[in-house]
Image 1 (cartoon, rainbow, N blue to C red):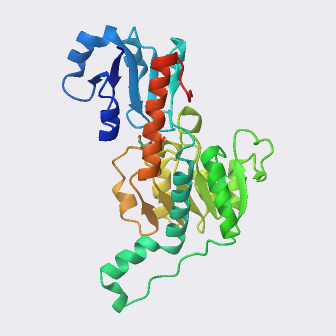
Image 2 (cartoon, helix red, strand yellow):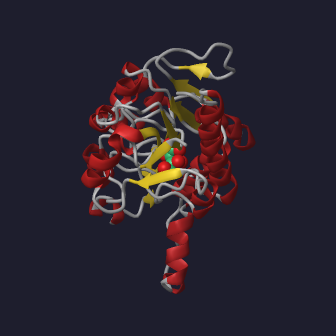
Image 3 (cartoon, helix red, strand yellow):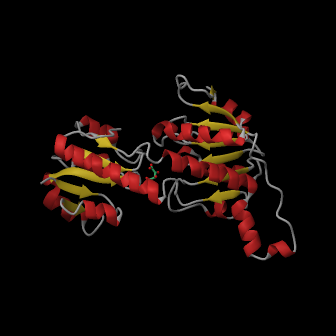
Length: 308
Ligand code: 8YV
């Protein structure tokens, strides 16, 4: 039986499905003592987009054969260090595309039409004395997408329902895409009314959205982030919002989760969510199944189903 190192808590459903395996809980108790006793025996690592896995930890596991991650993002996993050891890494792509794209549109509508702001307005009894300030139309507006991968495609598909024009920015054009490619991110930001971030996290997109991009999006533009907090220069975002150089933001991810800058919490034109893009019963269940199917496939046949 393979010894499995689990990096953080997963659902009770996952733990029940793992009950037939030897699973070591890295996050409980003394991790150093656990590694001192078991490092040489650990063959599989279970982690997630949130828990990740460092290169230094991979180095300490001489018998490690595979890493299976819950989540599509793998920017917190030292994939290159794993590859250098011939250790495959799996994630859980595709099964969450629709829910993350739904949430992106939820953030578009909320940040433009002020749903959360209006709810607080009513609950706080302020309607008796005033009207909520006007919001901005969504239908017929211009949607810029940074990262036309599987989630970005799902976001673009939803634009049809709102009669929106779509353009996207990638490192290179997507062959056969029906959407217009913009090679220059600043030009896309200048054109867009809503700029949706759906690109991977990691060194190649670190602070891709900086002051220049935010200024190009402008005082009537709205930034939507369902990607990673690391993609945005967060202090530059706060300053742009505070100084009125950016019209608003809808954010599901942040640079230092679960900590969110107090300055963002004080701004009325920002919608803040606790990284819930994939957080539905249906999608998290499908992600759990895919995580465990990857594990089972590797234990049975020595191969992962969805390697990154
Ligand atoms: C995570 C995410 O799955 O999949 C991703 O990359 O960002 C989320 O859906 C969730 O935060 C659990 O790690």
